[in-house]
Length: 294
Image (tube, rainbow, N blue to C red):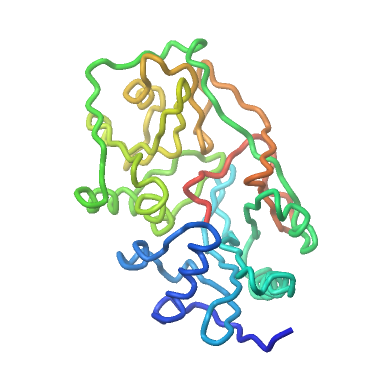
């Protein structure tokens, strides 16, 4: 095995940051530059990387995150952006980075968790992680009394024109659910605003609410609902469904069940949740907000 250098927390190192970004683009087609350049990469997101010849060749990052579970706030560490340059695979670099992170944080947080795809489902149990299946919350509109509001004022937002509004809502958002949610998550939410969901940001003027959403034939995917105050989800839906919409899928945990809502445990091999904790914290029906995945 080569003598590679372990580095971390280098967001202000131009060369290493550029190399990290290049590896992220090659691995996930994700470009972090816009997020960093706007000042959203803060000290909660820390990469741990092996470097060879000044180039980042393997990485595992952590994000310090406050997680609300059944009304109580826990200090969580989420591991993400686990990637290795294809020329350096099968050398155990990801394994070393994982052990390093676990040794650093296992005694200073309430739990550690991550999301994994089907190619590494057997990898994380080796470190003591347990897989927990999340739930899918969906609404069958044929079993609901919710109807489209005809005079809705729905505006599409853009990073270029509405950045100040997005930053304010990310910083001061109301927690959607006491069952499971995250808070003080503005940096990661701005990542989703600027990179992942930049084309599907909408604003309901009458409710002063931002909705990340996308229609797929007769199904409406609601990725997140961001407001400065508590919102009635039925009022939100009245403003965003189409006449053709038959089903709504929520990519987070709603605050409560409403008429026509269905909840089922939904194993997902492409985005499987793994948790490491001394005591079981997560049970029953829940779904981490997709905008909290790092």
